Image (cartoon, rainbow, N blue to C red; front, side):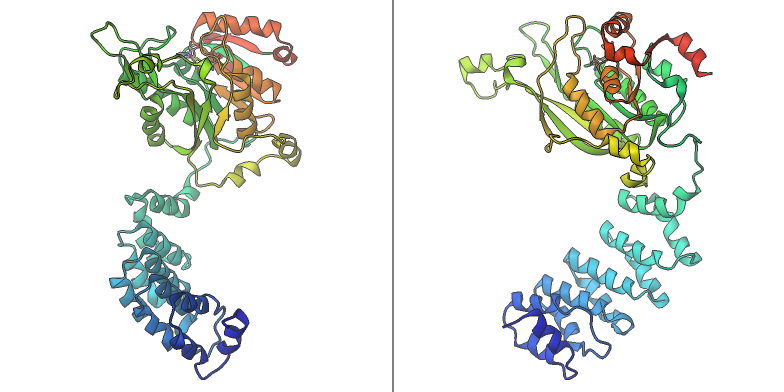
Length: 459
Ligand SMILES: C[S@@+](CC[C@H](N)C(=O)[O-])C[C@H]1O[C@@H](n2cnc3c(N)ncnc32)[C@H](O)[C@@H]1O
């Protein structure tokens, strides 16, 4: 019976016992089992059979053969690996070939590794780049790699940028990652968000959670066209990106909307806001992270299926829309999340840990909230989850479209700070009136400012 121990024993045999064992195998499973359990290879290992296996018809066998050839260090025959690379069609095997040649860390292999940079498969290119990074401070390698910062593939660009360009970028902001500016703490500004953000410094907020206007579906916002609406949101999220700290999150709550028909001879128009907004966000440096679906009870949403229930005619199907999206983005950075987390002291990390009972899926079942003054407010539970999962205690949470101030009140209750902008005086006043009723909002003073007052405080 084939066992790991048996293979290890035969491996030490200088008379090619493994090669004989391999030759005797009839099925691919056993062949792969042997190849995968060879472990470290002795210096005097007779390896010819591995090169024969490069011709095997089964890709997994070829891959395992290449892997083992890679373990032969200086003694492996790079030429046969390169010959295989030239006609190999399996991407896994091709990648393993590059990795095996790279693992030798030999200067004489540099021209081969450069040739892999021309491959059409970005994974091969990335593998070759990693292999070339071994030759640290090698001018020739650097000259070959630096231009790839303009490569058409995003993964390639990111690796090169991180290695050669990110370090050159001077730190824009002297404020520590966990800190923010005093004049933004628990402040609500009654102004157009774009005007207010002119006075907000780069990298000041830790999290943005917002629900933008629903194009022209509600009366608080009227845009000349859908394109104008998307371009307005693009500007808001470019500015939000600028004021967001490195590697921090933006969560945008939107859903497709319907603009009702003007008469019976027209049809209503549906706009896929989350899908149309997404390219603008990604284009401007927001890295897509997750889509969370907010699921509402069917009884709480507008009934659209009524007509279909009567006629049952295909094409006339209009399901009740029980979902909205929470699109999660991160300010693109070459730093890992760990870097962000390490910016906080131990106590803050400990105290911000999410308690048991957190949501484990991307479908959040939450009842919507109805309000007598504002027609589209966040349920507190939705805000709570976002703030708890995507910020630390003491962080500054921003909502450019403040509405009734749910994000502010919830941030405060969770020991975070907040900064809101809201254009409509009636909602700004409503927020102020809510502040009077709410003990939570009163605990630490909330500052309500006009644009002029905010401009002064920013000086
Ligand atoms: C969907 S509501 C947000 C409701 C909020 N999430 C809440 O829980 O109350 C969008 C809000 O954005 C505000 N708004 C629209 N355009 C704005 C702009 N240019 N600047 C600031 N606020 C704006 C509207 O007045 C409205 O209150």
